Image 1 (tube, helix red, strand yellow):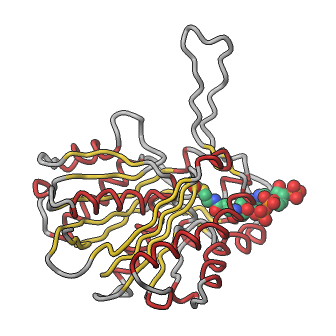
Image 2 (cartoon, rainbow, N blue to C red; image 1 turned 90 degrees about the vertical axis):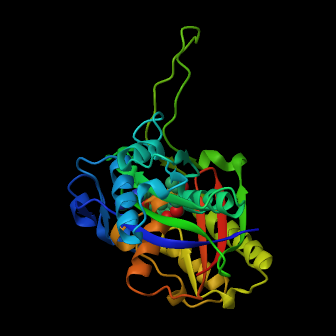
Length: 324
Ligand code: ACO
């Protein structure tokens, strides 16, 4: 199997910051309720951009940082659960915007596991030997999927995008092992953007429900119970123990879920960097944004072993172990 490496990272978050205090003007909530339960103080929300705009900014930054030309790209993959439209898909819009004429492009939707699942697909294309250079972006505008009157959901989410460039390499680095799991029988725990049948032959047409709903407590106990099992399997496949991992980049849904994960693995919280305090839960974008922040501040060093952990809608979980 060919090896691949991450050549560049980038992120783009909307400028508009909405604080917990500002939310109190919209709904019956408070910073005292939100912060201790979630670790979230702020979220960034779009004012006039859509998902493809955030993703295109990430794509442009990735090219600028790497010095690659858009024509170098063999493929562009975007993970999102909040595309501009079902068609055209977001990756195709990005491909058109940056004029990556040699690249094919498609979206992956694995909700909050989207970063790990999309990266898995991108890595597989490169390690197959069929392609040399790829772009992978996680991008979300979740603010269009939440009911801003619903305090149980709207306080949790934010908008943003992050991505990576990947290239085949002879160096001994890249994806060491992964474990991906689906739990479709529990899918009702996180519901968003339902399309009801409404053709001319349907008896009763159900109303469209675009909004995000979740069984918060159910998702919390699912994540704290199942995520460590999946991460353990990925570690076993890599022939590593939890101590061997330098940094764990987990999906930024909730600080308490991440604290529970660190405790479960007997690891210090310093190995589990977080940024949900500033961005909230940005689903497929959350780990990508965090990765770029850590790269840009020099916290990820060559030779480090890094675990990516995603969990959420589907339900689905994914864990990968990478050598940087
Ligand atoms: N402000 C004030 N009060 C609130 C708010 C709010 N924003 N939201 C809910 N409440 C109230 C509820 O109405 C309830 O009141 P009641 O007791 O009078 O009925 C009370 O607070 C407790 O509500 P719970 O939902 O039981 O609160 P909980 O302690 O479970 O915290 C939370 C909720 C933060 C959502 C937690 O369950 C959680 O983090 N779950 C995990 C969610 C998650 O990680 N999802 C990620 C997947 S998303 C994806 O895949 C795209």
